[in-house]
Image (cartoon, rainbow, N blue to C red; front, side):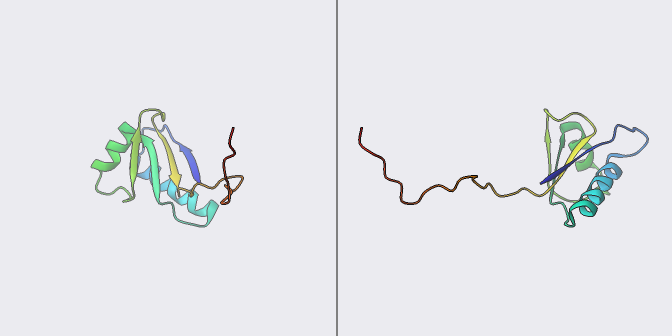
Length: 91
């Protein structure tokens, strides 16, 4: 589950925006976020900042600038379990 965080305020460094997003995630879900998905420019700023939180950060082009998705990746679960005794029928 991920929490989306948008903060376009240019007065604050990127690391503080990420810290706020991480704090809100922990407050809301009761667990610590394990990863961050953000824009490539924001990811580069976080990687260059020695004071930024140290967690896996992935930068992608399809997320708008100043947007951070923090959270924990859920394992993929099927809505309907795949049958283990499945046998294809002859046509």
